[in-house]
Amino acid sequence: MIERYSRPEMKEIWSSQEKYNIWFKIEAYACEAMAELGKIPKESVKNIWEKGKVDPLKIEEIEKITKHDVIAFLTNLAESIGEDSRFVHQGMTSSDVLDTTLSIQLKKSNQILLKEIDELLLALKHRAYEHKQTLTIGRSHGIHAEPMTFGLKLASFYSEFKRNKKRLENANKEISTCAISGAIGTFANIDPFVEKYVAKKLDLFPEEISTQVIPRDKHAMYFATLGVIASSIERISTEIRHLQRTEVREVEEYFSKGQKGSSAMPHKRNPVLTENLTGLARVIRSSVIPALENVALWHERDISHSSVERMIAPDVTITLDFALNRLTNVIKNLVVYPNKMKENLDALGGLVFSQQILLLLTQKGFSRERAYEIVQRNAMKVWEAPTSERSGLFQQLLIQDQEIISNINIDEINNQFDYKYHTKNIDNIFKRVFEN
Image (cartoon, rainbow, N blue to C red; front, side, top):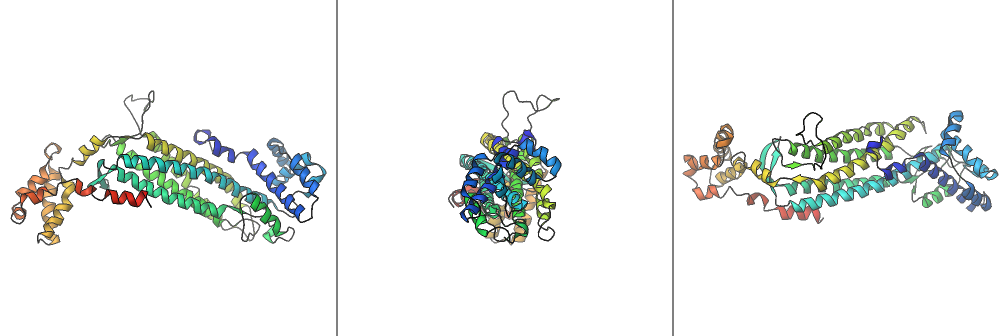
């Protein structure tokens, strides 16, 4: 992943040095386990731990000759350990090291991602309560529908990321497995105790049954979960981008001192952060199909999955870490314009109360079909009126409609034009979202 979208803590997990450090731990713990079984001298294990060192640059040079990364690693390790290196990797196969390492790296990445989701949840909750009663218009098909509050929008995002957190926790369990089962996964040349021992030391679970690899349906589920989280990031980003449009301007990304919006137009203040997040979400989701295609390997093992995972595992986790952090900062610093929300809310001259009038007419004896026709014919006159003439127009037209007035008094009609009607259950919704 390019530096622009990389954060140090997550990036370090996928560094060559960290990878080889994990490889060494797996090999050394396996030696410990074999010493417990009496197959390796305990003094040799002590020597392995004390003398074992890995050098990524040397491993790279050796791999140019061996064309095999694990053998290059073992060769380099043997240089520092000496004679006792003959006990390293006994009965193991390359995938025992590679797959268990991938599990550790994904698990470590998950800890960071879960922490980032927690930060995002805190930001969403804070802003949701801040704007719990901030009136705004709800839209369907991009068109004004009925009143709501901006806090409800944010509460909806909060609820979605609560689900995402659970999904990521479940996915974490799927990939937190260790396989030290040897060639073809039969334990023919290594005791199952070794796998159990190494798994415990690395805080993993022994894989229930591996072939020569950990089954890739687990990883497919993991990357699919990251794809879902990316889509949730995009949903929030898309909403902010729409609300920042000049014609709407209900919210705005924070525009810092000295920031520039355009090389050509000095007046521009663009939603560049949420546009960036939309693009990053596409990159993250692009990993899902390759991860799904990795499930079907030839027989007990091939390496068609390997090149895919070497690319998508670091790139996607690093990108998602960056995206979650950026989204949290967008939410924390989001500029909200309640007055503009109210202005937009009133832009259709009261049409947003049309359903209340419809329901009132049905309660007064009109059939639903007739009530709909009456409300719609008055509403269409408001749609066709110039914007400057719409204020209060819908209410006036209803009061002047003889078919309505002959059945309903004016006060009953006026009472329907009350924003509190639409906010009366907000406390109940907030309880569901934030107290469950």
